[in-house]
Image (cartoon, rainbow, N blue to C red):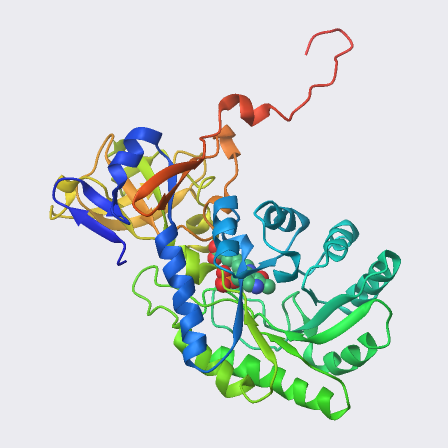
Amino acid sequence: HPHLTTDPLCGLMFEGVPLNAIADAVGTPCWVLGAGTLRQRLRRMQTAMTDAGLDVGIHYAVKANDHLSVLSLIGREGYGVDIVSGGELARTQKAGIPAERVVFSGVGKSDAELEYAIGLGVGQINVESAEELDIISAIATRLGKQASITLRINPDVDAKTHAKITTGLAANKFGIPFDNAAALYARAFTLPGLKPVGFATHIGSQILSTAPYHAAYARVAELVRSVRASGLKVEVVDCGGGLGICYRNEVEGRPEALAAAMRAELGDLGVRLSIEPGRWPIGPAGVLLSSVILRKEEGLPGPFLVLDAAMNDMVRPSMYDAWHGILPLAPQAFGQPATPTHVVGPVCESGDTFARDRQLPPLGRASRIAILDTGAYGAVMSSTYNSRPLAAQVLIEDGQWTVIRHRQTLEELWQDEAMPAHPTGKV
Ligand code: LLP
């Protein structure tokens, strides 16, 4: 983590800002996002592609972190976006991203979402089934529009990642079976309102080896060659996202290796290439700050550090058994002897556990910690379970920090609820 440093006076710093200063001002739990880290990682991806001699459009996967400040940065840097809902589309429009830079993915797009996207003229819709192709044709025709579409292919390739985030196996709900793809692509040219432009694939997330990418892209290349042989035009291949990062001791996925796979398998097809990365650019750009409510020594096999952050804030450890680094903020904590500690949240479920037997210095009541690599699939997956307000969010940009989301108030928790009038006048 080149942007995470320690200072003997200020303790843990992120992009040059003491995290304690942010926690003092904003309180905890609090998400901190570094714009510099995000920008650098996006540029590294772009450079890796250019250096491989490829002209690749980067479409940031909005689902990883959909904050307006993030989307506005993405737009200003000239990148496009990959979206999966009308809500994400609306955010990209609010952030000023041109519709032609939007790719619409997803296995179940509602009619209303498709009408919105086609009406706006999004750049590309990735179609995931035969039925969806007909629906899009009908909606585009009704609106008097021409929708650019690709077929998302399920290559039946094992990405060797967590079962809950693998998407490229035949058994998964995603994409069009390889064997049906050529015929469906041909059919797309016969339907009104459609402009078939090529193929897309996305095999999963947190992928750490390039072998599955090679396998998936080789299959797509085979498909491109075969439909071209039957006289159909293919202009685009969308290579999906999924490149993994280092949470613990994994070797981070390298954009250079991804570029090499794209070049080797797809480089000579003369198609426009694109990728849809989410986690890789923004995961390491965020930390979650939290304070220790108390240290519970009782019970086996303690001790438990009970935080003021919980599974409702950051669900990844509960949901995917994900491992996230945990570092103390205070300068005094560094270099102290570490002992195995369980780090948990206050929610009433045993699954509300951030880490088991984590080697940590002696932390206690009011100590602060940072949970690392929470920029992707962190705040976006929060809920208000246990009536816990959504945490505050802060953005660091050029050494200055700003609150980009205030801590939700208790009133805001129920402001959209209504109570039916009770016949007796009492609730
Ligand atoms: N494109 C499509 C069609 C996707 O479904 C996804 C992610 C991406 C791109 C971006 O993948 P990435 O580059 O971020 O790996 N909540 C889970 C991750 C779910 C990923 C879903 N799809 C987690 O916290 O691990």
